[in-house]
Structure formats: structure tokens, C-alpha cells
Image (cartoon, rainbow, N blue to C red):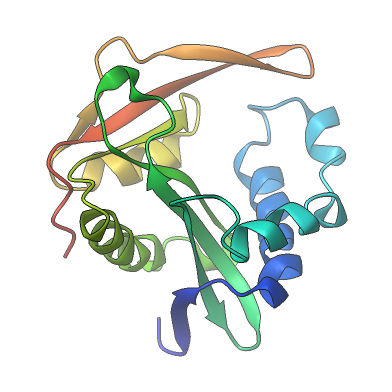
Length: 178
């Protein structure tokens, strides 16, 4: 992780964030999400959305980036829970990394900031949704201290006619990430 800076996103980071988002989806969800959907993911389609997120236009949400050698290599988005039905106050909305940035401890390092910021907002626990077939993502959340699959959280949604299942991991209290 030498040479990697973890910081809050700036509006000028939007193209890099959009690139990480589409690249990560194509890499992580190949064989899970229909290829037609992945093929249609182009960074230019989401740049404006990420610019707005970096500008703080989503109340309570934070956008954190990992920056190395002049480019964004990962990002995480978090804030108040979107679905209060499971009783969690905070939520990690998204965590994506370029393939070459994965497995180097970057997600754990960024999680330290996520946990600190959620606590500073008065959010003392968190939930994160993961595609059930995303084994690597599930392993990451299973290794964090205090986490467990939220009972009865399994649900599905549709992407290009395919039924995609996801489950939630809950952390109550927030994980003490080392």
C-alpha cells in the first residue's frame, strides 16, 4: 500500500471513479450478471452521477477514494442506512476496486475511515449488501470482526432479465478494523 492515498473524493475524480466502477463490475460480476449488462457499462455513462456524489449532493453520504500514481484505484460510498427495515443505522453502499488493487489490504484500510466516519455521524452499526454469488466480496465481510449474515435478508432483483440474489452482512456494533 506504499504510495496509496486514501482521501475524500473531489469532483475532478469522477472520471476515475466511473472507470473503477465499470471495470470492477466487469471483473467481479462476470458469470453472475448478464454479459449484455456488463458490456453496456461505460464510464462516460456514470461520470455525472459520480461528480454529484463527490460534490456532496447525497445528504449524509461520503465518497472515499484510493489514489495511486495519478489515478483512482478504488472507492467506497457510505452513510445512513437506506433501508431501516433491519434496524441498522449505517450502510456501506458500495466498495469497488480495480482488479490490480484487490487483495492488498486496501479495502481494510478504507474500512477504518468508513467506521470512523459512521461513528462520527452517530451511526453505531452498519449493514452492507453483497451479491450472493460474489464469493470474494462475501469472504471480505466475513473476515471483518463482529459481522454476520442478517437473518431473512436474502432478496433478489433483476438485471437484464436475470434474477440476482443478494444478502446483507450486519455489524453491530461497528467493526473494530485493525
